[in-house]
Length: 299
Ligand code: ATP
Image 1: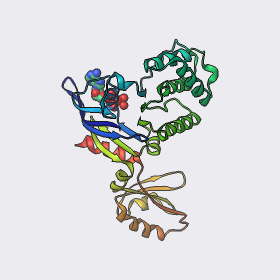
Image 2: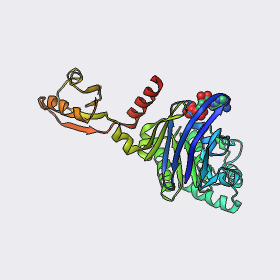
Image 3: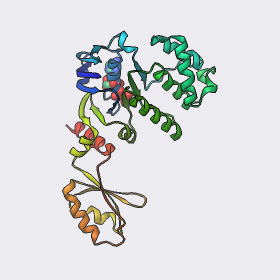
Image 4: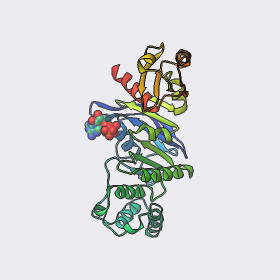
């Protein structure tokens, strides 16, 4: 298990991470989220043992993070770190050796991953000659070449087309199902929502949301009603309890204050013609994120 306990990081007098705690168990995909500058990279660097903590502790399976532990961590960082003049094979040999792997094991694993990602023909090609998406695949392969116990993925889908995003997602889920601990960071909430059962949202280094996604959604009082009927946006906006109405291509997303307000909207809509949809939904993670970050900035 990865255990981050009351971690604080100062750069000089600047507080970048403020008393942060969370745990990631084997098989879990954990979301570490925040706006730009919130402290995610700083947290990743501390977990990878690249930055000292000012206070608190970070342990992997009960051991403090040092060189013996970092061999078991794989990472795909936002600032891509490919050695572009090397060939794919040379790059993987370099990183695999750094992680303490035998050359024969690295080559075996590389062949199977290249095949899986359908890019075997690039093995002897220089990385700088590859397309951006294929470079991203190599970066990902490098991160998982040693079957890491803990895998850190910072914006892993940047630059990928939808088919490759699916391929990455499937691989990430497979790694988790085999027992890896995965920390996932993205500004794309729909990706986070799909993957992460647990998450933390940082604002100025402090957790403003921390826990189980299902509970976070249940505790967030606002709901959405997805609606199709002969009614105007203005009429809906006048209904008690309605906070906002978003007009979509062929339906309305009616954001309401709380579950108790559903009845008001229902009564109004029941008087309309052509009601073909009325579905009460949990708010999206994106809505919760925007609201929570907004509140934190207003404080
Ligand atoms: P992004 O999403 O933009 O990558 P982030 O959440 O990863 O942002 P960090 O890079 O961890 O944010 O930065 C957190 C804060 O710490 C920012 O205000 C940043 O300016 C500051 N910071 C980061 N590195 C240093 C450093 N070496 N010295 C001083 N301040 C730093």
